Image (cartoon, helix red, strand yellow):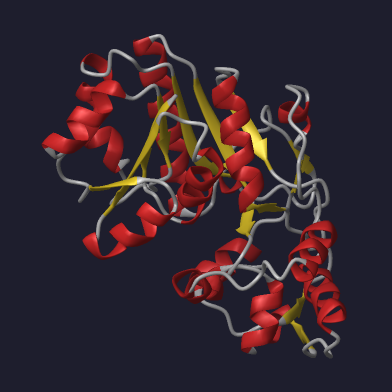
Length: 303
């Protein structure tokens, strides 16, 4: 297995760490040469990709790639990888066996708290989710054109080391916002990596929700984390009184329970099936802090 990851950020780096020693080689793109050392530590060969063109190095690696993972979101309404690498994928990647595209459960939009699965209607309300749905279609189409399976992984709110309720409590940024009936699903970054390995290893295509077993109110996660730390949880704040960024408000404008039954039917098992299991394990193993660049991103996470 020779892996090329477009967008070696939080999820891409977790996948690389999981596959180090299992894959023949792993390459990952970044926009900044300043991140080369971090990617190298995670077992990757760092490759610059500015979203405008493929370097000779990237083209050479893609020609040998068997498993292609896209963890880069749309920009200005278009998928940057599809825009730049479409012809390369169609005609200059002879070894390609499988493509994995990381999307979002945001494509389902609001379902008033009802359960959704991969056959549910997609009615995204946020522009970024509309763009993700468009990108999903583009990747599925390129898979059909190439004759290789494409797995679309629809991810819930991502958390893990450096991005979690424990970090938010420690930094003083945690909030217990209360809105009647509001629930969210979540997914630990290690389970994203495991799902990529599982689907890619079996050459499975199609759309899969990669989401935990237990959608729950966000304040429950904060309260549980506070109990683990032995601290008082922050006071409750009514949703109407909470100060939120436009992005955070868009998350709260959607309410659904996400089923993961389809990926489970392929034989996949979640290592972190719910927030209580995950937070307890991270706390006991002291695996919740994360690197500095990861901690800074927690402000936009709901867990």
